[in-house]
Image 1 (cartoon, rainbow, N blue to C red):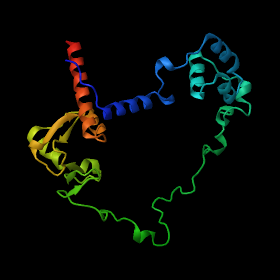
Image 2: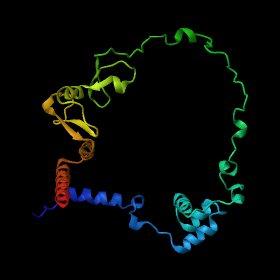
Image 3: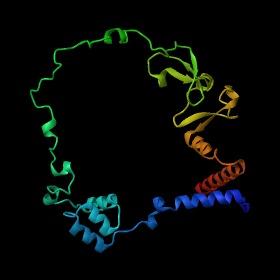
Image 4: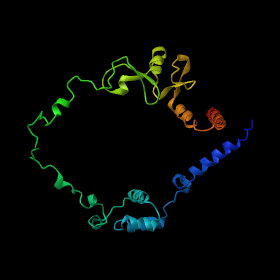
Length: 241
């Protein structure tokens, strides 16, 4: 069956995507400059004693490309270069911080002062043992997360990601068991307050990412993208057979 022609809106979106991915920051392997034999010879000759800005100007390449090529060739900076002003301070002197370290046998000023109390009102404003912060809630309380999910507090360890669990997750695990690794729950109607088992579906995180990625597009384009993804999966499945 011949695929239908994309709408004008879909064509414009695809052209925009191609333009973004074909820019200088998205070069493909075929577009990357290969080091020539002469450039490798020149790098071997210049790298030991030439400052990086000069190497970048000579080879017309970024510093990370030059560092990477030099490393793959086993090139090193010379001792004279490392001792010069052009080298990084830490590379010029690998023990540059020695003068600022604690020396062996040094006694800190607060040795033996465990439990030292600060002055002023420090003692009366400190948290007392067993005290709770002002926003503390008991086990069984509910709240709404920053992402808009209703959560219930099931433990009081003090670690929120463990203490608070989404209500729809609790419902699913009670009826269907734990959510498998690499999967998550999704609301079929998109309403996070409609916490019903029939409104939940188990999907992979990859599928969730694909769904979220196209939400910013108009309905017409989203439907086109879904159809293209479905066609691609069908072709891949057929090829595997």
